[in-house]
Amino acid sequence: MNTQFKCLIVASFVVLGSFLFTSRAFSQSIEVKNLEGLYQVQMITVPRLIEVELVSKQNEKRMNELKTLGHLCFLEVQVYRCTKTLKNPESDQIPAETFREVVSETNGSQLEFQKSGMLPELVQEGESLAEYLISDRVNVTNRGRQLTLNGYRYLIVDKVQNPIHKIALNIRNFDHWFVINGQGLLEWTIVKNVKVSETRSQNIYFTVFYNRL
Image 1 (cartoon, rainbow, N blue to C red):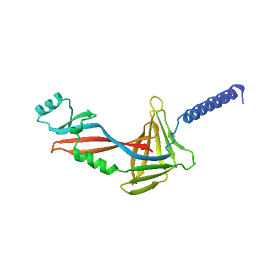
Image 2: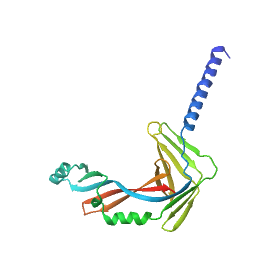
Image 3: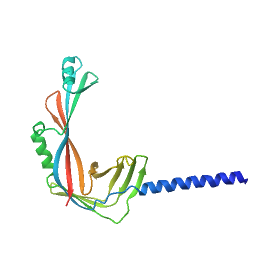
């Protein structure tokens, strides 16, 4: 083996070792938050409401009226789908029956995270996302019924610029996503679709806050 080839092999191992060390150090610098404890619903807000109206392709007059009111309209086959987003809508803009429905669904809801002693398992990692498998037990209590989960997914999104920590609890084969907002606070988004008329509807986004007790 000539000297030039030996140097090439050594250099390759140095580069590879440096890459692995950097990747490992980068992964370890991402902090998985400790969620141990009991959380209970404390507050419900409506940060967003989307008004939707379907307008016939021939009814350009109504479509232009909605645009004047701030709607965005897109043609879908034979109808325009016009939408307008209201941020932090007033209480009188939210159907009282729908709000009561969400309160009833979440009243007394609790999440209890119990440490298993096992370390988080890194499942995948990219430039902007890291996903872990957490083996901690989670007791979910809702409407007097309790369900025990033996683990959950933990995601860190946009980890370089503005990391967002999220967990997915798989309840009855459906992932319920919670955003970790600071210490001892989880946010769960519920979306309700309310039919106003044959052509009008509302998509209402409720944020349910779980505080650690």
